[in-house]
Length: 135
Image (cartoon, rainbow, N blue to C red; front, side, top):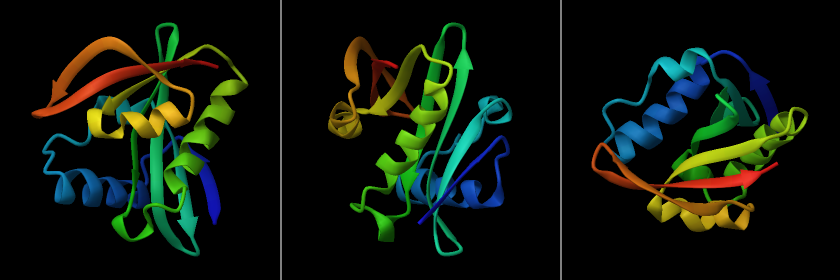
């Protein structure tokens, strides 16, 4: 596995997010203005991009999102690998880290030290919970 960190929404990242969030989960509004200010982690298996996440700083907190892995590569720890790489980069600057997690993914984030806040919301009909971690 190879990990890259970039400031650009590459075709590889776009492909992973289209497959996971749009084709599999049915989201319509996957790409937004935050993509222009985000940093990205991409995990490669050989030449194939298989997992990604994005992160950006807003106000006094870092926001991690769009954490996903292509279906054939799931349950191999690759989303954790991407998230931990983002946390490593964020760690050089410190601060509070927030994740807007799909409710079904909350246990994954709890295993990585995030705790649920009181803030729950829906994104395109999918229930989410805000989670945080001090880094």
